[in-house]
Image (cartoon, rainbow, N blue to C red; front, top):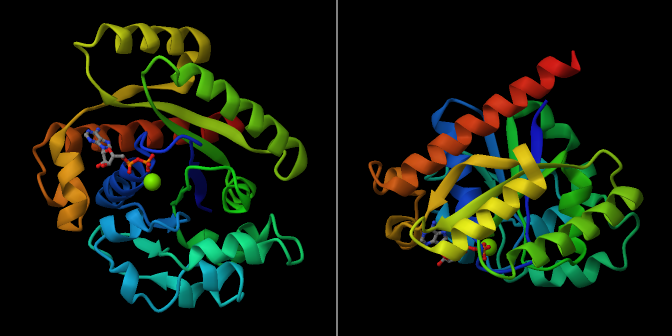
Length: 261
Ligand code: ADP
Ligand code: MG
């Protein structure tokens, strides 16, 4: 049964999509079966997986609003060696259409049920807002992975996100947990980043991943090449960092299931 991890932060530009694409590719490289769901109408995770968002047959709009069969919406064999559910501008309309439908918060969760046992990990790349799409992601997920930049206002944003999660836990998903907090675009020479990083560890303890994603130009270049960074520059620090993150996520998952049994 797949572990479903939503990659979320209501702030834009913190590295959600970069993390979704490169973590999915790194997991796939370790022979895990992976599905990446692009829930952002910008379709960046779709393009970053080497899939043309202007030329896809079905998007998550068709899954959520038209209730198309999940197998028909999945794009197999992307350039990241994982499966994908694509997004593009059409998905903006899904936010509005969903308002009118029955059990609108749990559409994604129910749609995924038939394929959950086909994957080891399902990652959901969330839009940078707390709309109905994000609520669907959180209702479908086991846990949330929060990428964040170690900036002055980062902790404030994180507290706001935690509050929102707590409210959603009560309403749509009582089992939702925090998978981990990931420091992205990290520059160790920046004193403020180090300070914020320390505060983060004091506050969230071992929820903060040991793996840190450095600022690395290859990570920013890879999307224009239409592939995860490991297929663009395998030896880059960015590629190595996301492989290390995949290892850390796997180890945590295995520890959790060992404790549960
Ligand atoms: P989000 O999905 O949260 O909006 P993105 O993953 O799209 O954030 O990242 C925002 C921008 O920063 C993109 O242009 C991306 O290529 C770049 N970026 C993300 N992570 C890194 C990194 N570690 N080093 C350098 N650039 C990065
Ligand atoms: Mg994004």
